[in-house]
Length: 153
Image 1 (cartoon, rainbow, N blue to C red):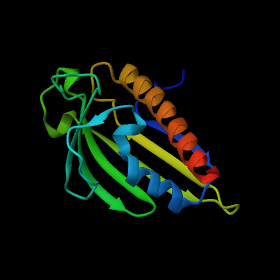
Image 2: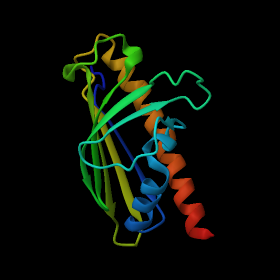
Image 3: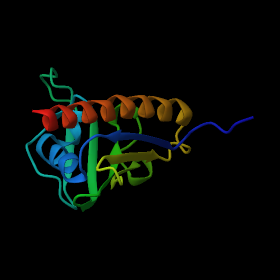
Image 4: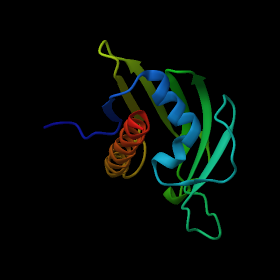
């Protein structure tokens, strides 16, 4: 029997150079990939904290809290994320790591890989990993469409 997925890994190839993909991430932010709104307009830099919520939420209840650990243009962003809706306390052991990497392909395209986890220590880890994986698929498709649309313009 296959072990349940508790660490999410998703990839997409974008028909644009690495620098264009990085610029889109800088210009629009990671929150926009998930159709979330940033609590404040702040650049991603190492050590910064970001709070994301649903755009239509008048109370701006945090949906995700992230602490940025690595920003290495134009190839990598890493962060630790916490989901307040998990019901778990906001403590380091209740965070998951997110590692977003951009790698140039020989043909000028960019391979974007995101890995998030490990959800194995959470009560419903497999379910949480599956949900995160689905969100990342949608986010990476949005990123690809956005970058390729901007490259075509």
